[in-house]
Length: 257
Image 1 (cartoon, rainbow, N blue to C red):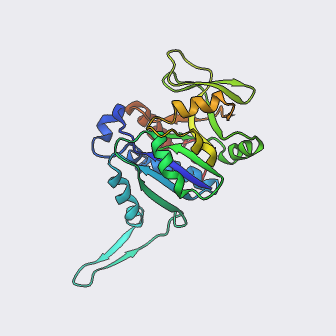
Image 2: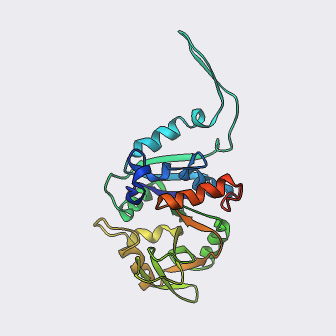
């Protein structure tokens, strides 16, 4: 199943890290947080990625163009006929990565719309390039397939600056972006979507978290897969350090591979 990842935002709250690189390339344990997200999906068997690039997208393109170089021990023979010998293989050799330029200022609904022509299945996965979890991706897909809705969102415990979900059973009956008060469950940013999502992406550019998600909720077309385990976004330097500390300690909950 293909995985769309939003990689184009400015990351303004992490300015000290994102002045020269996009937020998905900010390192956790010496590797981009984007790599950790992709490893999570790959551990569940999903290795076809569509990266929606925007701000400093060339940094992500360069990273994957030289991926073998970036992750391997190398011996180089210099001279008129240079040679490069890579000394180790890596588990990512069966990944397929589509690097899709979706515009510098395009918002998330527009980025998703531009990714749809590259998706050839009825169901696909969507995530942001700045959050980690140990949520069971396989279980969320099974949950989605048992229902008839267009969207399934992974709902996680609260942080007040994220979009609040109001549930009736497992149906999302209302969605509010960034409420003033702490919510019961919030949008964790890991989705299972049907291609019918195209009907909810307007002609004008907007955030996926605004008009499309509100319409899905109002139409009864969004369910919530509740995850009460680990989830952490990386919007600030403090949150980056939380993730780095977990990785350095060998206790990173998202490391399921």
